[in-house]
Amino acid sequence: MPGTESLLDYADDLTEARLHILERRGRFQEYLYLAEAEGQTEAYVTMLVRLGRVEEAISYGRQYLATPEEALTLAKALYENGEYKQSLQIAEHGLSLEGRKASLAKWLRDQAWSMGEKTRALTAAEVAFRDEINLENYQRVAEIAGERWPERRTGLLDHARQTKSTYPKGQIDVFLHEGLIDDAITALDPYASHTLVEQVVDAALQLQSQLDWVIQACRKQAEYIMDRGKAELYSSAANWLAKARKAYHMLRREAEWQTYLDELLNQHGRKYKLVPMLKALGR
Image (cartoon, rainbow, N blue to C red; front, side, top):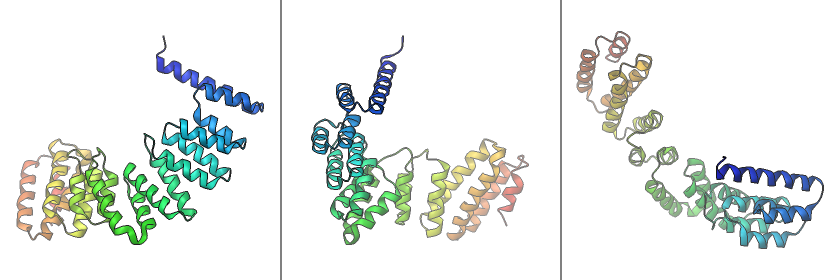
């Protein structure tokens, strides 16, 4: 027998199909009865707006909207119907509901900003960043905050530092944008992807910061490839080692680099595809 979830999905699909039929036939009151009875809140309030029953839609929405996504649907419907202020109010209400808020917050941020509602736009921009940490959301807060940016910046950076993620690209993009190499390194998970590690390594080299960490990170990436004999990735290993060599040179530790390179040549001397790449790094 199909599971409960499958039956519920089927029931929802059936309800949506019936709603489409009623809408095409212009049987709007029956549409509303069915949508309300089946808990199709988004469909219900959207149709109320389309029928010009705006106050009813807003009142019902405030009482029964359950998620930010549902609030976004109503807010968009109101906005498209020319009810601009009411749309912002419903969007603000949606930010108080449980669930992911980024999509709603970004919509409210952009619409409020375009309408000159700077305070609303700034609040929504901060919510968007806190729910979805990335450089674009961060820069939008900076743009909207204007002279108030320094105080806002501190709070957002603290939030980024405290938020843990298995793929912290958003945090790292923000930290590197601000030149905060230490924070970017801290944000890296011990098992972070090589792409994220390389992003931080390149930034650190450019700023000539945390070069000892750069050396260790690059050696770890290169040694993982070489020790496992991943011949198809030897060029990548050489690339990591070239970055390590650059850090050694910046620290004026050329002799230490050469000693390390000699150890690698001795250890991997039988790997004929790798050896020429290693020797080239001694030049």
